[in-house]
Image (cartoon, rainbow, N blue to C red; front, side, top):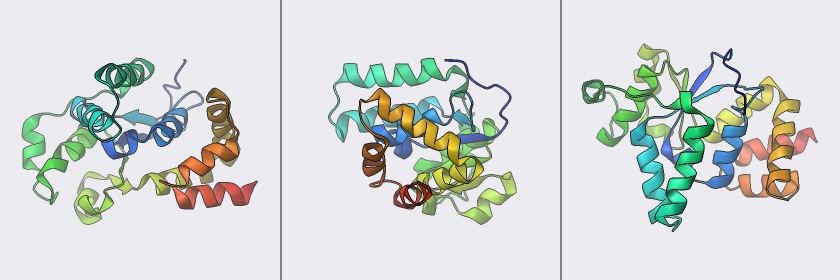
Length: 188
């Protein structure tokens, strides 16, 4: 895969949006050439993804490793590391366990944090770092408005890859991104 290195818009993907396979696949396809954004994550986020894959989805340790390895091989530039002292200093994030996410976003010069735990990232606190926070649903809607035809093309490729139709992918995505799916369906 060839990535578009010219795209400067960067999104830090939180673990909760990388665990559901269909959502993760959609988000990462939008980052493939022609890329709509640059994905970012930290080793701590990937560890959380792996833990959730095993504990919540019941993947084996081998399946966990394969999935994380595929993600990091496809997007080697996505991995960033934030100093631990930065995370500790971010007292405006109410959940101490989420501070590493903002620290990674700051270190990676992210424009947005994509998470389904939006309430844990107060917009007034993030504003001082010029970072937005969007749910996966809102982020996908934003991407769709930027280039609906490219998003639909990437959804088609995702469907072909799993030997399904775009409609089937949208049915699965509706569970985690219902507003995006409604928008995509209204466009068709």
